Image (tube, rainbow, N blue to C red; front, side, top):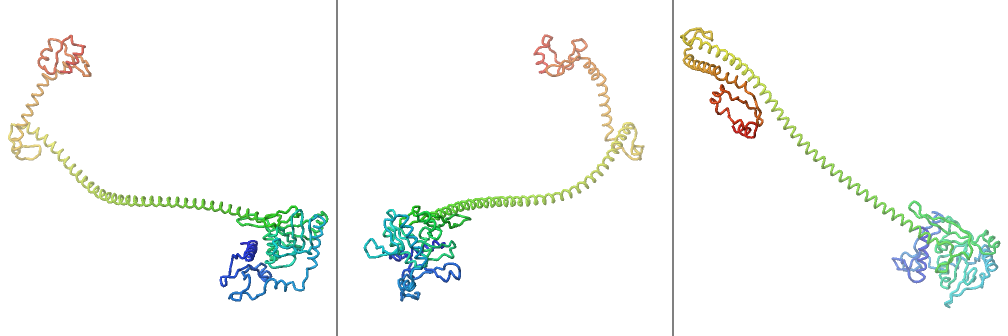
Length: 475
């Protein structure tokens, strides 16, 4: 809540208390409360220090303030034996002169006539300058000194009830809020942050232009770096350029509307920022979830890799064990191979010796088969009895020799002549098979009769036909 909002709250509390509809009450005695400011705080702290105070003091409240005097008495004491200041009188007379001579008012009074409440309740006020201009009633109040908020609020409420537009006139208006009087704030803040000033420059301009000119100070609001910032501006205006609210109070620039636009703009920016932050949070959350998922997948892969590595390591250990076993087996096999090679060499030597000896024995037995065997020279180059060998193998050797002679005779008489004849035969390919063709000569008749299964006889008319192939294949 800024200082303008606090001043508006002061006005709301005061109006509600006057109307008998209090907003805040004392928790101790239920008395209506209003918002006050400590003057010393401005001097010491260079800012207003606000506090809540009883609307009217009560003796029964344990947290009551000391003063029990009514506001009227306090005002009387404040301005006792004090008349209007010369600057106040001069400014009031100059204002009345300008309005009277340059605006042709239907009615005008310069601090010499009371304005009575139209309801007839007898309530009255005497404005510094009253004027009826173009059918609109104006009450001009010169404010050069401080006064109570209740005076300001009740006076504005009185004129509002009677459809009179009240214009508060300042002689001087500082832009530094820490220098501004609380009375000034109580006046311009509820008036849409418009402060009207009639200084010497405006008086000269009004006389020169023959029309009342006022310098109006008003606030504009904008949003900067996420905050609502205000700036004082001023314009020179006339009565004709003023705007009027429902309470008949004139204003030049609606700073409340401007502030509301700034608030809406700030809310829009904050909403955009919120949406942006939500999106950012969503993106971050999605990114975190994605990273978490990646991490989970990575951990799963690492776990699988570790499991695989353990399995591979286990396999490697087994393979190493098998390798060691194989190396050991290899050494054993190598030893066995060497042993077997040695044995094989020995066996080969013995076999060679055996073959040689067997050949010698065979030839020996064959040569001396008709002679005695005892202590004769033998293939072993020793004198020994080999009669047992003679008795066992001599008959076999004779049989082998007889078989060889028979085969040789048969080869010379039958097989070789037959081979000679076959070589002389012409060859013919029938059905992918090579056949020897025996000419039908007299000398071959014995051969055909001798080998009826091996030699097939077909008619001459079947040669070169399908029957030739079938017959031969069948055969």
